[in-house]
Image (cartoon, rainbow, N blue to C red; front, side, top):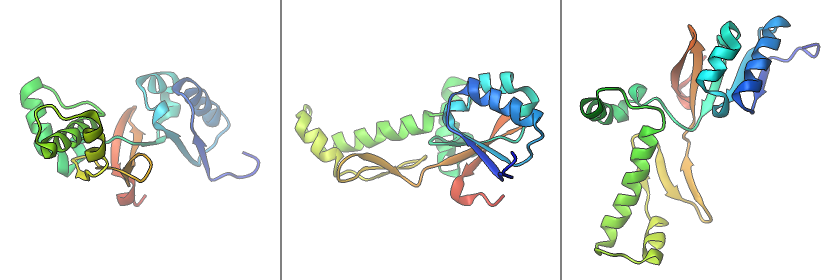
Length: 166
């Protein structure tokens, strides 16, 4: 605080994030407060209470109800299960179709494991939440980071970090 920091970034679990939120509020800190998805839990909201307000969280998942590309998925999910899809559901859907596309491309009713792995490394899938493919040495997703903010005591998805202006 004495150094005049403009922002605080916390990369730990929800309990400690809530403690930090309370301490920052008590100290009168008014700068940006950021955390990773590990703290984006109901426990953070209840433990931090009103000190949670305004915190921003960076996540690898989106709120599918806020994504234009996921609207057909959201409609189908709601029709089948009677509720909106939860966090990570769009990513699970993408991962399933990534593997399904790979298996379909192999065309065999019982493909061998090495053939599946080889084909996965050749598959480039543009899903409803993110693009999935393998790099030279590992699985990766490209430019898929989303921001959430605590507003009115609840989490609100701001969207893709590249589209956030303030």
